Length: 212
Image (spheres, rainbow, N blue to C red):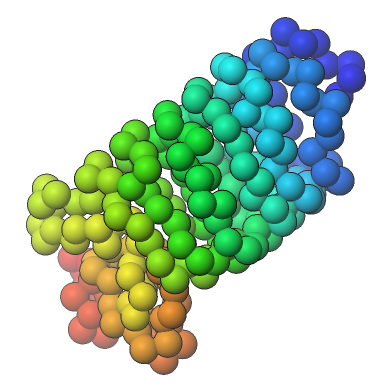
């Protein structure tokens, strides 16, 4: 990390076997605007010092073993992918408040709990919180919800299926609406132990038609 030039704009280290925590030595690379270190073996916290990178707009940390989501304060970050980690515990209350330019966020396949609030930002247009343990979702930004453009309209279920429902994708969309599920206790669930479901069966008749 110390050998990397401080003028570096993009860092591509995905699909390696890099172990340990994200090193503090990378803190000196303040010219980075794009970071992809997904599909590695990183552990520990998402470093808060990433917020000091004034030009950083895309950060991909998916498919690692990170356990602490941390708190990044960045006015430039637009894309954040933290999916498929081991993040747990409650979301920091001001997490999205400190990312005012964020347009896309993927938190799927973690163990985050409690409440997540999308009302603090108006720039978001793509959210994935599938398969976490969120029990409460704050008011959605209007830009996130289906405003009747699709037929049928799924409203805010296009962001995440509410508690008591599920969808194989965790949200309503091309696979149809969210389906009632008695054992679905969290938002954005993609499975239902009490109900059999055939993937792609949009009309839920138990048969995959040629049209589907």
